[in-house]
Image (cartoon, rainbow, N blue to C red; front, side, top):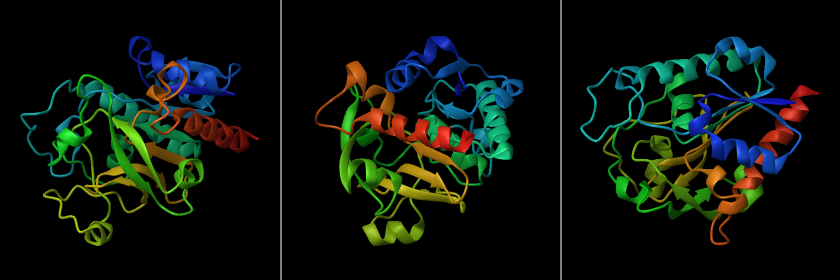
Length: 239
């Protein structure tokens, strides 16, 4: 089985280490070429900088807080995602990768979250509490509530109905796409975990590759469990 990582080697070492730790025999290739997609059994869309605002609904101007925007990289990653959607093969989007999945399926993105400081890195990964939907893959792995790490200031929110249930009123209309099911959320209503309605596509706003192996923390979710579950799903789909 071969896993493709849509990035560059210098910025994806932690993802490679997490995959190797989970399954030492798994094949891994790092590339941004859509031509490689047919040779991969599953795709990882890694974290990174902020997303080009021209890809957002309404094409708004860039927020002053945006940084590390790479328009070419965004489009290369979306092209690989599109190839996997057509092939109906598994995808795991992490942080920026989850945001790209939501945008691809018609959702929105808040360029700077109202409670950004809760989610941003501060001298290291910041931990915060999240909730998982009953019966979701994340609830199966971690239970109903658990701590995760954060290193982002952009994101999108649960559905308006869910937000109302939380008693939250986002100042943005950046919600999950219609085919995207939010299965994990932070206390401010920001989506932390998603799945596609019927395709084998998962997304996490947090960084499991920095919560396993040498990065394991007993006070947070074990990121290795997500990679194990994802590789198991990919193996089953391959079979």
